Image 1: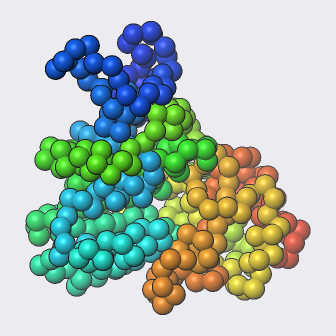
Image 2: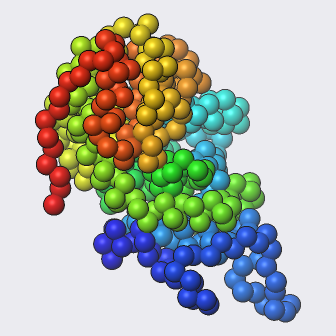
Image 3: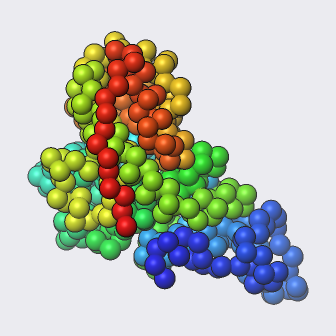
Length: 392
């Protein structure tokens, strides 16, 4: 099946008992056994739940993997994945990775003997320089959040595999519609399903997709033992969101292309970060390993003192954390998503007090530009945008 069809029908097109075309919400904590030593395959929802099972199978198919595991959040997924490693192991991590991941790694797992090295993974020399005999994994975001740096998945996979380690790729920004890291040698794909997969800002979820038989046993045990498994209703909401993923991603990407170009021409904007610009440092790489540029944009204001006014004035675009939904959001990373990262480290990664991040939704692009135009100084300035050809 092609990807669009997998998003709708992967795992199961309908309930085999009732014929329901919408996967039922099995809102049950426990399941009756027919007799001693007999089971329907489901015993307790923390271990397995029929609604969650369909979602896990569907996302595994979408990411070209053998196994999928659904968690109550992206952080829950990452926490379970770390259980594959042991104290003393080192993991190299993208320097401008989501701040919550930094908090989890340095605030919690470092206490138990794990070590984490933060590097600009788009610069392969930094990966090589920071690798040690204790390095057992690379953990990358590509594109990265929020600086939109692109890391070479194939090269990273080949490098860490030579060292006997794993490549972990957070694919939240591009989703399986635009990018499939397992096809380029990644061992594990991570998603915050709260974002594009769910797509409506109404459910938390997280995912691991992979094809490693041995790791599957350990990950299932961690999921069940820690109890971070996704609840049935949130699994159903995410299944519903997946059905329109391709349509939403394409619309957001078209809007983002127009808005990124518009922002480049605005006198209050210093620099725009979007992976679809031909002059992006890793544009060619991005074109080779992905099929689209997504809906995420970051930009520097020329004057940081104007940012409170911008955040106060936006109306259609909402000032809120998170990303990837049908509604456009604007975020101030230095005080929101990346506040847990030390200031010196943030600054070195480019996450300064001048940076704003946009998650472009599916609204009419002219309405979004009008909202930005009245919010950015000087208020009321309007800059026209060139028409963009829609894909066939």
